[in-house]
Image (tube, rainbow, N blue to C red; front, side, top):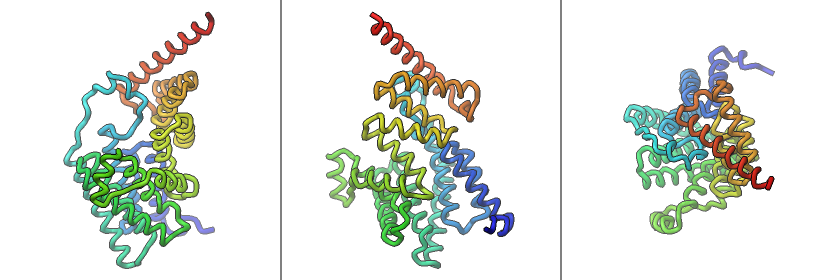
Amino acid sequence: MLGLASFGPGLALAAGDRAAGLDHYLNREFGLAVAAFERHLANEQDSPEAHLLLTKALLYQELDRLGFVGTRAFRGDREYRSAEKPKPEARISRRILDALEEGRQTCERVLVESGEDRQALHSLAQFYLVEATYEYFIAKAYFKALASGRQARELSYRVGELYPDFPDGLLVAGFQEYIVGKIPWALRVMIAMRGYGGSKKKGIELVERVAQEGGENRNEARILLAVIYRWEGPPEEAAEAFASLAEDFPRAYMFPLEAADLYESAREKAMALELFEEVSRKQKAGENRFDRMSERMAAALGRRIEALERALSDKRRRTAR
């Protein structure tokens, strides 16, 4: 079998940067992912996927900075929630939008030259989803987000029709079906009058299919599915999904935090305490880069551990009577 080196050092280097970037991205190390994907794109300027990977990493780096990516484990901690929230920066927004537009133009060039190229169509669907996510969370342009999301879903279904043996192509459609289907009933009726609709059930089925059968988007589907399970319950199922992600992506400290919080919701307090304590131990030791956790979050983690210890101690005393 021919190795990457057979095609020259440029391709081998690009492939290495792509793999490194994906590893950082899935471990929620978005800044490192951006750096790796920038190197990858420098060697793959004509690749729709290379543009997409960088654009997604840029977007999620900013969403993480703004507090939209992370954990719900400390939502009940007033001190944690009361901290001043950072605001979007025009310079960062401009970089995301420029990368988005450049990537979309690359997809369209490939489609002009190659017709219904699978990767270009799949990437283009994801670019529209990136745009919808940016419009919703950063620009606060909610109806624009719905319009971009609909374009993303239509392209995703087109990929599914053209390439039925490529389940990854339906991830965008699944996500959009679920998100629109999750909107409260009264608002859903209003947006339906503008031609927007969605089905939670269908969305979950599509995301589950990608999580089980997908290739390049399988792990993204698994992360999305864990979040969906958290919203939909029961907590035990979501806890197991996050625990599995924590095993596969050991530097993403938010996955064990989510699992611990869900185990506590499922009344498995001892399991929750064990996980919280393990995260705290790694944070203090700098293991698996957990020391990048903010001081604010580390303090909230300490308070959560103390509260659980008290609850378990009280339970033991009641049982002993």
